[in-house]
Each structure stands twice: as structure tokens, then as C-alpha cells.
Length: 429
Image (cartoon, rainbow, N blue to C red; front, side, top):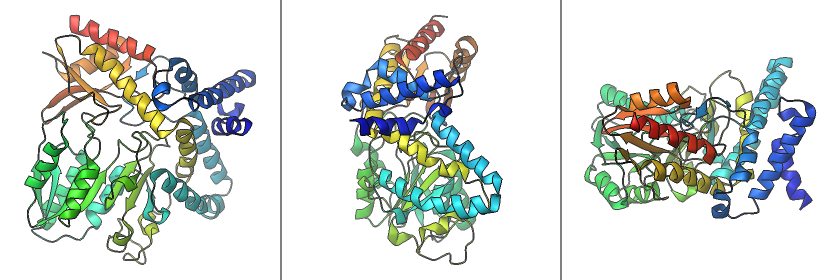
């Protein structure tokens, strides 16, 4: 028992992790580690609504006390222990940059690769550490050999950077994009799978799959889609920017060919950190984004050839993984879904409010979207911030005209009560 409690104290750090007076900061650090310890004694479902424990755990973050951030889907704040790790590695680098960066921190990437592989459930030799999903998936988009007339299938709700990359290949090289436009929200796996199958021809080489659609929060049946693609000899590319360290799964569950994610979202890793995974047999067949001596080698490290950059954010990914593991993947997912249900079930009672997301856990988790009849999403989002200091994001894309709400583990139900009250006032105004 003392060993287990010491683990959580190590995750949070000592008084130096908090920029308060030593006695106060030490008390906060001990309280956070005790809250994490107590959460871990509860089942994920039982822990989901323990407000007292989550409120204590939230002290690990340094979020604004005046602005309520409900746009964690864009980029998440880091717990203080991660922020401090970045500072520590950065200052160390400045003591003798070429020594500490290239001989010390750069060497630390291998241990970090193993740590990420353990979290992802795949071989460490299939993981490259990148800066974001755009870079990870861009590497695959540009590095996959295709010829004029080859086709890919993707949806109009995929992320813009991914759409733009494939469109550039279409313009420059004459490949063809076969588009599908699902009706969101979806609560039937087969309806989406059939759209991909219906858009597939003998010339189709790639299915571009988004695990959680960023516009609405829709979870798609990626494992089933990958299985269908394999039957047809089609390559699968999974955009998991919003699902990794958000949903409780392993990459190996999908048996996909390529997988990219951003670690600065739900893992709460430093800004500008991401990860690329690919099937081992595809490494030598995939060209790196940046030039290397042996571009057709089977070494996953060829996808990390970025030249000089700061190793501080990269190395602090390790502290983010520790913090995530201290909460637990399943426990985190249950809490995030609980928070989504909490506000959705409250606001949808009003006849003018419409939800654009399923409330079933298999089809959505933290991200949720709503609209108010007769109002533009941008106007709703502006009112929430200007009148109530609640930061959200508006979505106007394809058929969606809605406000996206994304709480995180530091968000409390008291915060959401304030949001619900604000929405009710806007509806009545």
C-alpha cells in the first residue's frame, strides 16, 4: 500500500511542482496524489461521478480561475508536473546545447518510444515521435506510392489538413478522391461501413478513416472498417487525433496499416507533440517526409529526421504518460463520458436546443455539439464568452452549424452547472 501511494506522489512531484508557498504547494501536491490514489481504488464507473475526488485531482492543473475552458478538444492544458518537466529539460539544454540536446536528451527518445509503445499496445519499432497528427499523417499521405488513376475514399467530415493533403496529390498526380458524406450523428455501424464500400472500386488503394470526427465528436467503427478494407487489399490510414488517451483502446485493436495522433490533446503532453505508428512491413515501403540517407530503410526512426528542434517538449511526454496512467484509461473515458452526458441531458430539455451527437458511449465520449434554433453557432459561442467567460468553439462545416463543447478531467460538474445556466439564459434572451 505505501508503495502504491508513493507511486502517485512521484507522478505529481514535490512542492516544486506548484508555484505557491512551500507549505501550501506541498499540501496541494499531497492532496492531488491522495485523490489519484483514492480514485484508483474505485471502479471506472464508480469513480466517474465522485465529484470530491475529481475536484481535488484537478488541482494538478493550472487552468484559469476566470475563464472556463470548454474547448479542450483543440489542445489540452498540461498538468503542472508536465509543464515543469518541459522547463527543466529546456534549461538543461541551455547549459551546453549540443551536448545535452544531442548526447543526453536525444538518447532519451528510445526509452520514451518504449513507453509510448506500452501505452499504445504495439511494438516500439513501429512508433515514430512526431509533432502532431498533421505531420504524422502527412508523412503517410505523401510517402505512400500511388499512381495516376488510383483512388482513395474519405469523408467530407475528415480533418481539413488531411483533406488538403490528399487534394494536393489529386491536383499534382492525378489520383482520385471518392467522397462520402455521412449523416451525423450515426448510431449504426453498418450504415457508415456501407458508405465506404459503396465508394470503393477496383482502383481504390486507401481508406482514410477518422476515429473521432473533430466537428461533432462522432466515434466511428474503425476496427470494423479496417477489417473490411483488409478483405479488399486496401490500405487503412487512421486519424486518431481526438481518440488517443481519450478512449480506452490499444492501436493493436484496429489492426490498421497507419495511425497518427496528437499527444498534446487528450494525453495532455506538451504542445507540438505527436506520434506515428505503421505496420512494420510498410516502413521500408513508405517514404519519409524529410530526406534521410536511406529513405527506403526499414527503420522507423527515418520518420523522425526533423533537423534541430527542442527536445524539451518531446522528453516531457513521459511525464504526461505517467499522469495519464495514474488516472487510468478506462477511468478517464468513463469520467469524460459522464461529463458529456451531464450537460447534454440538461440542455436538451429545452425545445429550441438540438444535440448533434449520440449519447451512447460507443458513438461519442467527451466531445459534444449542440445548436439553438434560430441562432448561428458563432453567435452562441460569442455570447458564451462575452457574457459568461466560457470559452467554446463554433462549428460551421458541411451540414453542421453547432457549438462544440469539450470538458476534460479537471472540469467539474459545478463548472458545467455554470455552463448550463448560461445556455438557458441565451435561449431565453
